[in-house]
Structures are given as C-alpha cells and as structure tokens.
Image 1: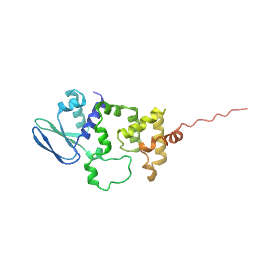
Image 2 (image 1 turned 120 degrees about the vertical axis):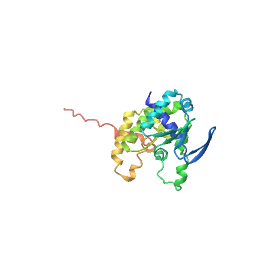
Image 3 (image 1 turned 90 degrees about the vertical axis):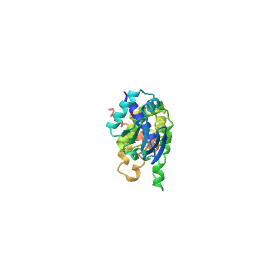
Image 4 (image 1 turned 180 degrees about the vertical axis):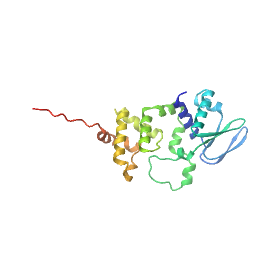
Length: 220
C-alpha cells in the first residue's frame, strides 16, 4: 500500500469530521458526535476512496498507531475521533488578522477546507504527491509552519513551475528568505506561499537565491 493513499484517507476523514458537537441520524438511531468526530463505515469509506476493504482496514490501523485518530466500533459502524483536531482545523494561512469571534471560527469550516472537501480522491492524491506539494512540505519543515496543500497554495507553486522554476530553485528561495526573515518578527509572517511564490515577487527572490558564480581571473 502506498503512503499517498494513507494521506488521502486521513485528509478525507479530517475534512468530514464535525466542526462542533452535533447529533447525526442514521438508520440505527441518533448518534451524538463531539467536535472532531465522525461516523465511519468501512465499506462506504472503501467505496469513497476507491480502495479495497482490506486496504482501508490497514490504513485505519496505521492511523491509530500514529495516534492521528481513535476508533470506537459499534455493531454497524465506528465513531472516529481525530486526535488534536484543532491542529488540523485552525487556519494558519494568508491572513494575519485575528478573528473577532473565536467560537464562530472554531465551529465554521474554513474556505480551504471547503475547497479540499469538494476535490475528488484522484485530485487529493495529485495534490499530496505533486512537486508543488513537495515544495510546500519543504517550506513547512524549514519554517515550522502548517500550510496545507489546498488549491490556493498549490496553484501558486504550480504557476511558478510552469514558468520555468524548478523544485530545487524554489527550495533555495525558501532557504534564502528564511535566513533573511526568520529572526525578524515583522518579516517572519511573510514566510508563506502567497508571498514567496507571488508572480511579481518570485523573480526577485529567485535572484537572491541564485548560486553565486565564481569570478575567474584572466591573465593578460
């Protein structure tokens, strides 16, 4: 089994977990769910993910071992709980303004989550496995950020790649701008896709990140 299938399944379950305590009706009765929980039927999930039932079972075991989720089985389905759900739900992109209503933010799906929720499984896998996702993951590792592979971020990187940038070049840009901005509290917030991979700014950053050419002395 490939890890992209595990990542896509994890993302699928996170996006379909409830954002606030609620009650859901099933043919077996009413199920009370807390924030970060969802109803999981293996056969249905296997169909949604276009995977075998055994593959889904293996993925769920892996996610439990990684302490990403817990499962509480019933006779007909399982209630899953995303561990540290707020870590995945909180938006850490684009805006630097604090919300005026924290409770509303916690209970309302973000724009990025809504975008991802409507992607097909094939599209989810494409985002997770693409060169653009590799660049985004590198930024997260180096800047200790949590930008997610949503269309808004991925398309910025894809556009620069189509213009001729390479993955290695973009990694150099990330390294260069982190070195310049990471210790500056004001500038640190610009270590984000919307700034680093902006169409008008990227060429400037890539110039700063270009490998230095050694000057050869020519004797007369």
